[in-house]
Length: 189
Image (cartoon, rainbow, N blue to C red):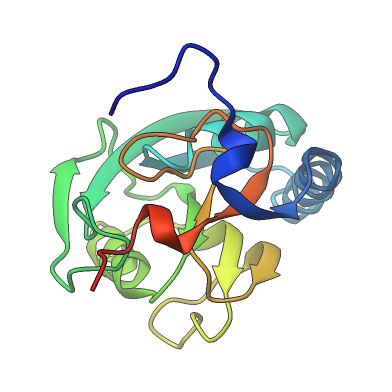
């Protein structure tokens, strides 16, 4: 990707969906709720790479409990804007989850396919508890196979970037969540 000398990401965005201030407020609220729910427990936060990194770090700083961090890398999108339907583990956890309280931290729950796969995989490893915290949950994405216990924001079914979410590895560093202009990622007919 060729980047001009002065990068102006706002030129590529249709609208800001979740502001930086709203993200800060909601992450703090989630941290307080999780701290309360896991009173007296140690918690393993499992971040789904790469998109959840910024959310995971900010959330971990808001949780007033002992936490450990681990990461998984999952592929279901490739370079596309829609899930391929095939889910693969690219990087597995470094630590065992057996007998531990595990909270999966996701950037976005879209179809729920990736999350359902992660839940099946980790349940088989016998954690003491297994829950999900999703920063963004698209309308109609949650189902019985991919429940989200802690929801940051419910958003419409639009392609979003920022705060860890990318398109072709760009836009992750935006401090807000925004809708990318469709003409930037759709093939011309």
